[in-house]
Structures are given as structure tokens and as C-alpha cells.
Length: 191
Image (cartoon, rainbow, N blue to C red; front, side):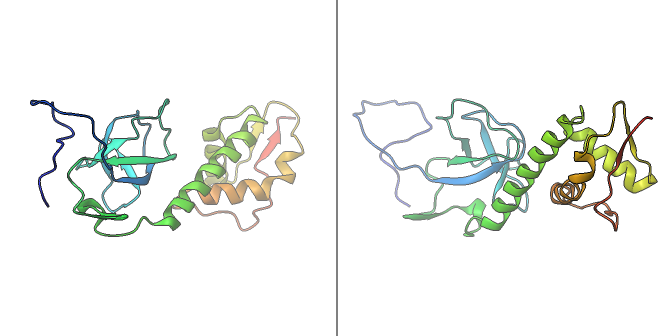
């Protein structure tokens, strides 16, 4: 690879004029909350999940974003200058092992995020957090104990039970043993 004329990522030490550059970018998923311009790398064994705690940093979070990237959200990774080993509309980079981005993994992460949002909304209707819904389901699986609400059990506890179990199965990467009857509600009132 020939030495670039512009040394992006270094201070300018000689007179320079205006120019334009190409920057290699890749769609990736935040494994934790990240700030625009934060240095990140791929997580071991993944070609789509990135973190600031990765072993090898390979680029930065899209510096033009005006807000932080939440965990599980997709964004553009700007690869470090002069690290791309080949460029012809499609680029290669050693950290990606010449693999194309796994669109199936991106779709799975999208489904997980949608299910987290569904469960958070479901929980809010019961005055519960997302995590409290997950914990109540885990307790039900382990002990068979239903969760006592401090008010009359809303109809959604019964009508949306199958949907709740479906979303729990999606968000759990190693789903705990789900009950045979995934139509059963895990909530009841204290009466």
C-alpha cells in the first residue's frame, strides 16, 4: 500500500491545502453505550458487535452523531485511516477477516431489541420494569410461584401471556426452560 498524501490522525506539520478523503465505514452494533468519536473494536468472535473495551481498537463511533449510541443499537463504525488493506467499492480490513457483515446477526439483534421494548412496555402496564418482568418469569420457571401484583390482575396478563413468553424466549440468548404451556400467566392479584 502506498503512503497516503494526507496523514489523517496526525497533527499537520507542513503546509497543506484543502482535500477530500475516503473513510471506510461498517454497520455495527453497540455492545454497551458509546459516545460519538469513541474508540472501539470488534468483540472477540464477532464481526458486528463493538465495544470500547475490545482487545483491539480499530476505529471510532460515527463522530457526526449528536447523541450517544445505546446498547444494542446499530451505527456506522469509522475505521482508522490507513488500515484498510484493499479498497474498490467493497473494502477489506484485517479485523473483519475478509468476511461480509453477518446480516442474520444484525436481524437477531434487531429482534432482541424489539422484544426488550415490548417487554418494557408490557411491564410498564403492570407498574414493573423490564428486568422485573424477566425476574418474575425466571422465578416462575424455577419455583412455579406466580408474581403477586398489588392491584387487580389486568386482562393483559392473560391475553398477552403467549406474546410475553415469545419475547422472553427471543431476548434470552440461552433461554431458560420455558414452561410447556406458554399461554399461562405468571401474574395474579394479592386478593
